[in-house]
Length: 354
Ligand SMILES: Nc1ncnc2c1ncn2[C@@H]1O[C@H](COP(=O)(O)OP(=O)(O)OP(=O)(O)O)[C@@H](O)[C@H]1O
Ligand SMILES: [Mg+2]
Image (cartoon, rainbow, N blue to C red; front, top):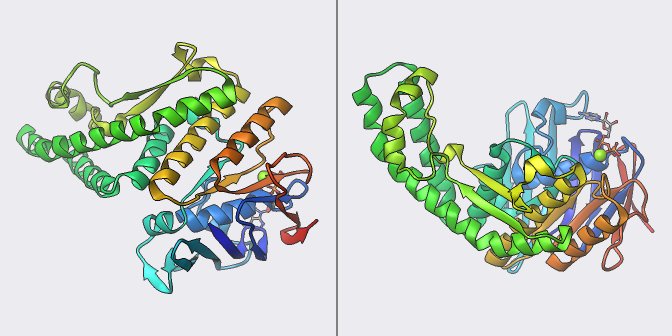
């Protein structure tokens, strides 16, 4: 849980500093006042990147050459200082006063999830977001997942480089053993994680949409085939396309709503609720494994939802017991289970309110 947070020269925030409450925090302000920028800064401290996909140069306050973010994060054992600086010299991370290797260290120090107006893409968009969703849970609940994933990605790159260079079939096949071993491990890990998250996914489906949702892991190659055979059978196509077409890098989660594929069926508001159900389930699962409350950022959660849906979302959020930082245009627009700590933002200046 993060208590003190400071952002300097990040987007429109020249210098923002505030003391966050342990449960609910609400930042309100007019359009373009800096609400999303503030959440983006908070998320950057836990991810080392922008949830809006912005580059460093877009995040730097106009005319500045570096931004600095700092937080005091409370753990069971005490408080730890987490700092990030980015600018000309690239990303620099400090945790507990020492230089740390980067984004993975930040994710461990300040695990967080975001529900923003783009969250529906988790349902409506391509498989990459759903893979990332699953890998995020896996990172927090499976000890080796990140290392395994990195090794797999390296092997995939090397195999793809050989394909692009039109290497001999023997050279390409020489990558297969390692590829298959790591792919198999990744597949098992992801399936285990989805199974572990499933109850919470379905429960949140019932809470938010009053329906039974299904979540099927699609492994990234033909269902009834061994990956080894898919690789062999696909060699010609791989050579033609210069990239490996079968493997866990092509995996997806098929979300089933009323027996049909959700992305083809549901309305935009339903997509948002469905995606939110997934984010809340991921948060709950990681929280249980890490045995600490995570940080949940809600950027304008009321957008696109009717009154009843907002109330359902907010009560599901409250039931998680995580630390929440939400934004809204009007201070009274959201119902929290207890009075939130309130802040007002105007032209990039954040001040405590009410
Ligand atoms: N790098 C930057 N430097 C300075 N200002 C920036 C930078 N990037 C964005 N801004 C400005 O910051 C302001 C706040 O943007 P932000 O998206 O945080 O607003 P918001 O309060 O979330 O608005 P909305 O209610 O419309 O979502 C905008 O006027 C935007 O143009
Ligand atoms: Mg905004």
